[in-house]
Image 1: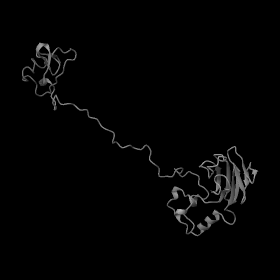
Image 2 (image 1 turned 135 degrees about the horizontal axis):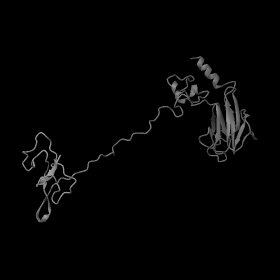
Image 3 (image 1 turned 180 degrees about the horizontal axis):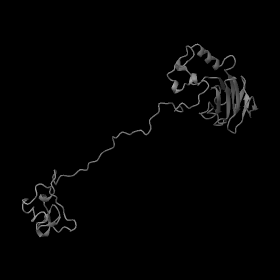
Length: 263
């Protein structure tokens, strides 16, 4: 290609056209080809050669609408920026709430001795839960009561605390099984532990994990000590009267065996 410019400022291929096809009114143009108008960027444009402008009076550049590139909009029409608003875009949650109860994400969790009756696993939800006759389903407890501790003094005087099978932690924290939340003399976490062992129907009291001491009938407890009905456990300034429920005359294991045999 031999690109040249005519006297009127038009660019054309000299190897293809003998003279400027634009000045000739298009007679020399090849109608079978698409015309391309390309400025020679290697040479700076002279005065009055900017697209859309012509040389006017007193050597000034004047706006020439006829020479501007064609468009479907008027030259005086304002161009408005188009943008996308994300204000109405819905927020997608990062996590999807699980339908499985907390702590039971799979089948590998600890099952308590009476959970088969009182807290069945999610995999057994379709099974009909055996409950004692004439016992309303709404009144069903989360775990069977095996005894009580009754506050004989302090801020909780007269209050009874249910005991469950296994370990029952005594402390000031609301997370404790026996929560003495209003007595500052009691350690926050695990001041003492009361244990019910369901196979031998044995009740024990033992020190907790805090540095505070626990007493049974005014005697310090340094190792697990067996409990009997009406024993008094002292933690801080609080006396707790112990009352058992299970024994040879009644226990939950025998009751559940009877219920299963009647099914």
